[in-house]
Amino acid sequence: MSLDVSEALSRLALRLGGEGARLAQAGRLSGGASMETWAFAIETAGGREDLILRRRGAPFDPGNARSIRLATEAALIRATGARGAPVPPVRHICDDADGLGEAYVMGRIAGETLGKRIVSDARFDAVRGTLARQCGAVLAQIHATPPPADLGLKTVDGAGELDRYEEVYRATGAGRPILELAFQYLRQHLPQPAPPTLLHGDFRNGNLMFDPDKGLVAVLDWELSHIGDPAEDMGWICTNSWRFGRPDRPVGGFGDYADLLAGYAAAGGRPVELSRVRFWQMLGSLRWGVMCLTMYMSWANGTERSVERPMIGRRVSETEADLVVLLEQGL
Amino acid sequence: MITHPRTEELAQAVAAWIDEIRPGLDPRNGFLARVAANALATVGRELTLGPAAEAAAVAAMAQVLARAGTHAELTEELCARIRSAELTVATPGLLAALRTMASDQLAIDQPSYRPEGSPPPPP
Image 1 (tube, rainbow over the protein chains, first blue to last red):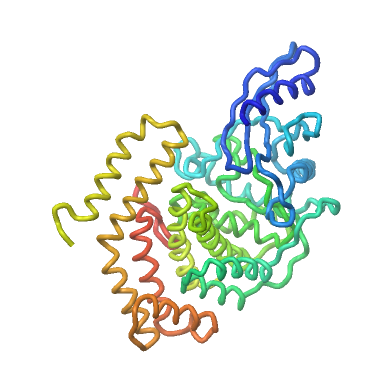
Image 2 (cartoon, rainbow over the protein chains, first blue to last red; image 1 turned 90 degrees about the vertical axis):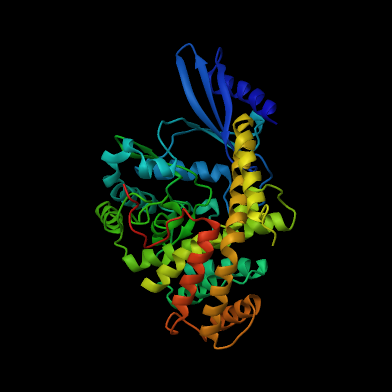
């Protein structure tokens, strides 16, 4: 498989760089079984270009998948980038001639994506206090992007999400009183409907690239993008599982609610109430808890064999510890 | 249970061996080996902390439900009565019971996790 990709990248180098261009370097970075990320470079007489290939390694099932097609992802990156959001430049959307399957190419940018480092490395001490506000401003830019109608994005609201995750939870057969109480409480505190808004869908510390001087330089991982309540994106980056050991700094482990909300409003976003963000934050913990259960289930039913899966199942209790405090505090 | 060695000591010994061979593994297996060692550490904590945690959970649930039962029976009934909204966040003692159960389980699964509401870590 990896040999095929390297060969295809050599051909792609010619297509993108023109005659005389050659593949200077190629290596797989990371990603799960279904999504591959490759770093590669093209050398031409004019110089070297560092690029990233994002490629689906397993067949895409639009009926079942929560995620969107890679061409859709690339279109959203371009559309939000045109509104000023910091995103990687999309260089090329692959077609059949490339022999890479579903894939696209973007420019490689430098920065840090490991959440723990952004939260605790001294390199980020100077910029850390500005990041929550910056995240708010960038979310306002993303949310101001008119949702492209022809992309077939799914629409999601609070009630629908609760239905969806409760069905998944029931199917696992697990009995977890705190998750039960969170479902009940959130159903009783559903926010008023929000105007349909383009959401990133996975906006959290870990999917954002930061620079020690410039702060937020790129919003990555658009595969869960959908239409919904703007506060969903704000609540997800406040979910404690993505604060990397700094629960005292609710936004991503680096900032405060007030800065996120102020940055959002100052950049032209329709003001959002904190309780609405907290609704989605609590739903974020609940959602992550249910996802951890399903990862255990994928091992229990034999779909996956990795020891990682049952161990992620033991992360449900982190969401329960968070949820019980949120239930005590209220929204 | 016999004591020479205790079960948690067996788990501890295997985890220590995995950590020893880890540096020689390729990155993927190195990562999985770390997960495996962590799994054994969880097993060890459950063996030592589990009995008291389960007893505390049984006592806490029995008080909320005003009846006796096993952990499985009480958990099932608690879930059902929360699902039917007979018990809510306003039910006296419910959140306190759930908080005890959550923090005891977290101490087994992931003692380094800092839950919502924790103070900043010491510098």
